[in-house]
Image (cartoon, rainbow over all chains, first blue to last red; front, side, top):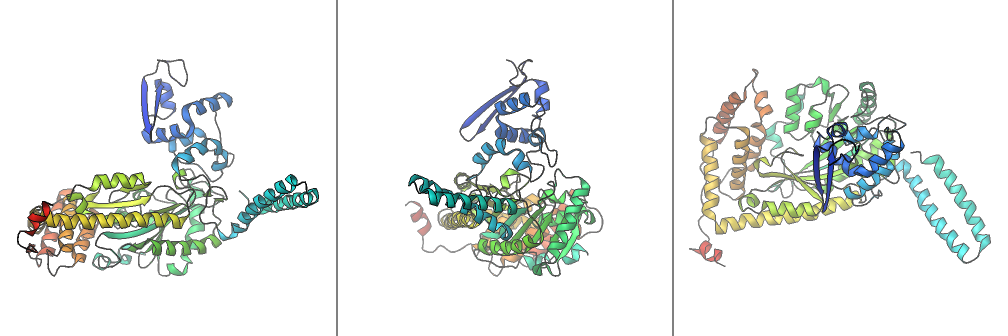
Length: 169
Length: 370
């Protein structure tokens, strides 16, 4: 059996992980196992969950093996695989895509509905207002009320501009 | 400031009362927060951790509830001090391993505790005796709302409070209760209970949290999911589950006494016998036997003995607390001898457990057949 990462060497490390009702099997050669930090079972299971082997392969192929790297703190995907933790708040944007699946399996939802710092509550209102305006706009267009639609479009533009100025993440 | 002088004496903290405290030893709400423009502690360089510490620590010290607080950096605390804090459940074992660049602020009555640069920049917890999750959340929420004016938290409208580990993302809240469940353990009902609690998305852990065993029949129940639910919804869910567990524990105790009184008396009597007469005893054995004595006190088998005596011994017989009372370094064997001496001495005024007269002649046996 060939290693499922490099597809060159004979796989000598075989892992089976059961998460929920899903079973995942991984066969690695010794070298790949080392670079993936498989000796650390906790780190590995998280990484496995997070990226799925297919994903990490794709990213490595696309980025010449470098993977994603956080522009703010220099944290890489390999670091995350090893630590199971992120480097800084910006990492959540950097690794947004690979994180999405992980958050789904980990939590009740993928959108925060709890406490919001008072200073940002206004920003939250903006985004609620935006959704509200967009709905009204769709309705206006449907009803062919283009005068109303034009007003709404301008309002949406203004709201977005203001929101961009206040919510800084 | 000297930590030893600051901490509340175990005799006093063991006397704290709260609702349902015969089963719920304490309630806790922990929040994880991070500053916006800094790497998380596990990735940050030492200079950055110190910078974060120097921003957060003064902000906490100015909170009105933190008047007369203990505030210090982890490198100033001895290994023994740190272990004592762990044994009191005031800091995590992870935090005890930290040194320069990490800090601790603990308020006068030990109900509010802030760990700086643990896994996150700030981990803060409110602790209440007995079952008082709402009160703990209220206290923590209020302190957090004051702090957020002084600190710029890392927060995303979609993902909430950003944390080093994605498992804490969103609310950053961990709501937990420490439960004493000897009845369910003796009745061998604890495993199905743990399994069903797990199915509800809650975690059950041992005495010292993650990855520890349930010494002294003490279990911690807490939420696992932090994103996609409001804080109060999480508190309410835990409250519901805890109410069920309390009921099951009370039922288990009542039915044990009714159906297997000899088994209960045997366990409690032997526990008393060993504790009151041993000359060498490990910390683990002490906790497990004290748990049975605590059950005996709850069942009225030790008339005139207050539960606080047992709870105080629970604290005092732990390794770091024993070491603190002696200037020379004790080996594990030394500690076992000293622990046995202390427990024997403290139990001297306690008479052996009574056995309750059956409510009606032969009643116990008849009912067990039903």
